[in-house]
Length: 393
Image (cartoon, rainbow, N blue to C red):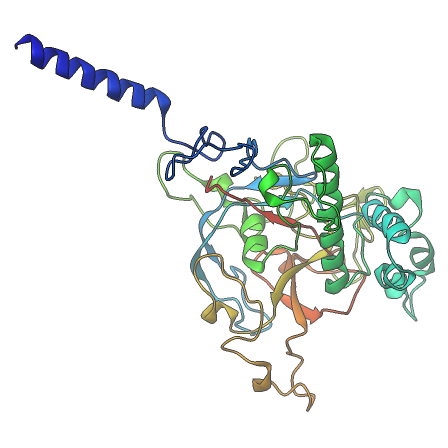
């Protein structure tokens, strides 16, 4: 090889080595200048690119790694609704509250909106505590004490409608992002009240999970995943392994894994040997979490999700991030709600998970029911979710 060729190859190698060391620009390391115009970032009159080290950690949230799954009921369809047949979908990664929103969280919400909002909105945010009242039951203490008595602080809030839950998500987004911006020293533009997304210090919106996200997170099939391939060892009836509702392992063997109604008149078992230990709702961190680290994805309270209800949702939605936001392809005019032959309208929402007042059948993630979005009961609460922005991890 002559000297000229040697020097040429050597120079080419140095260029390639330099290129490899420099690497391609990323969201967290965009470089000092645009790769398309060559104009430097962050000059006095130039395009501003804020520092960014990834989506900030949202208070109370657990990361749920997405992927392929089979949604749908694995239990016998006792009600003969055929409204959640099995189908394969892919759900993108997202975040979800590790536990249900509790009374203390709702009282905090009421405290701040009483300071910052109109009296009318404050009143609209009050939970309906009369959901505990029954003509033939002495539930009066729950009507008066459940929301505000300190002993119930970390019990799930109930008596909140789907609409109230959505308002809470909006408020929580604002409060969390204001706090993150304050900690990062980012000023909120005057007159807007909003922190720019481009700042990189704020979170996407807190919101109710979609039905697909909720069901996927409840399945927690990551716990059955074989590490060396894409196979999962089994499907789950409940958010845990096995076909039973008692813990089959260790020192807690025989203990119930969720708060539910074991049978007619049996909410908690007998004194001295209580089964799930809860006559009504229970501490939001009670019972073992599933393989994603989520508590009470079965039992305790049912939980609102975003979707409106349709019996044939499994037929109509997409197979990537399925979600039914309205009556598209299945309009409410096809249901005779006005003639009292159907309860299905665009104002009914899905809830899932089973509650302290439900039998074990409803603990299965694939089961689904619905209720008017402005209604509330003592058996329905909620938790928040959030997208995983800018990453497929």
